[in-house]
Image (tube, rainbow, N blue to C red; front, side, top):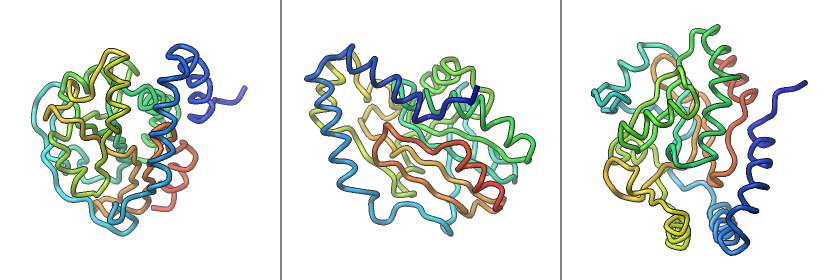
Length: 218
């Protein structure tokens, strides 16, 4: 039996989620996704050939770490995600744990996930998915801003979040609603981007075979 893709898992999740939250809230999120898709990837977003800048990040235990130290001079796959509150992020991270991490270890490539959450949020993501790779916080989205992949939920979507009992700002280290577009970067040992995949529709993610194809071109 083949392993389900992220898209397969998202489709199954969406069926149940839509039934759970009802048509009105579902329509809010559908409009948000359509607007994001129509706007497209922002001009100036990180692209192949760019260098990922140094950044001061925070581990799940609250300790500070520089990006270069987290990478240890090795090539890496960087995964920018919205937060542990995002079911699509959890599906992707758990899939990367199961299907991507072993292959990257065989290749000597790091896997690092980065979000704007508090360290507690990072720890929640680790616990949600049984994650064995590095999970870091980017306070105030400092790195995300420099990479040009910053966004935020629409006002209507944040109202829908409130109706569902949560607010993005409660999870973020800077108490704002700012979040990254879900993005996967494959970088070489010099932190030069060799593959960039920015997803403006947050229900879609980069599939494992696509990432491994990029890694094998390093």
